Length: 356
Image 1 (spheres, rainbow, N blue to C red):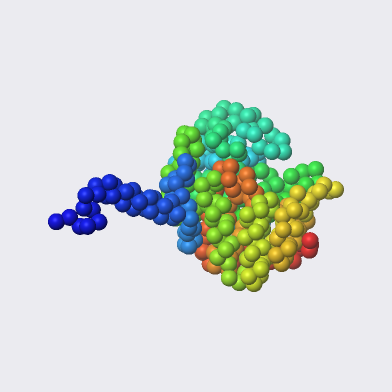
Image 2: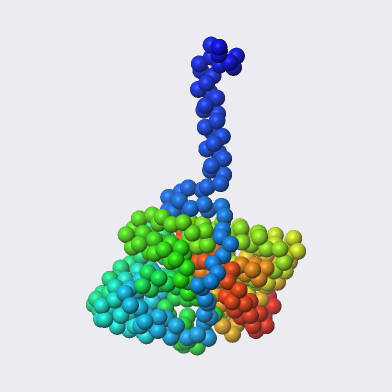
């Protein structure tokens, strides 16, 4: 005997099935954001942070030898995906690696802002030395990532470009040295995910990876920044080059309004030029955020430290293009030694900076 709900109503079964299907789809899309290029990862949550097998070095203190020595010690492969490559000693180290039979591959952004040495000329020079070198993928507004993979076992996830100013030197002509933070990560899951991104970008395909500790534009970086900032209970330390995204600015201001002690360090304007971060500074100061600008070092750093327990380090700026249109790479870390270095360096920079 048929249940009264279904008796003589075959169309009702189809209707109920359709409603249930809609509910399932709605539930799924609320938890998993699937879009081209997001690698099939859950973009609504971020990892607890990489710890163990991870370290950080700070520029300008460490100098370029951290990079050149790492390349010199590679046994099988050196893969680089980077925004700027002009440091002559790094280029020489890459050429020497190729000469000894190492698989050296370089992807370089062909249209960086601000001029400088020609990326095309650099690519030609690398190719002449036997390096597999090519422009970065045209799928992104810019490839602003600063990444290197050694022997498929170690990933460098950096705020540093491979330029003189980024690696402990000066940009010349009275220029200043940068503040940078560079992560060395040997955790297999992280390394394999970075390799997957490199290979996808090399082949101009969508990256498929599964690692909630990676912060990747344009995949999950906006959500990662927002979630990380929103998770702060007591302290929030930010060093950034840019403050030019209203959504992230609101999250920062909201943290201060709910009682989090928020400190932000940005670059001091150069010369008589206007402060490109002035609007963003105004927005977060309205929420009670303490803001200072560093004139001793150029603040090229990109870090967010939450409650002394978890931090972001990577290439992403707090700007709409960086989060939504560029290829960027960063990582969430919870390693106590890394966090101590980040916090101590931040406090030194804070004492050297001027109140805005």
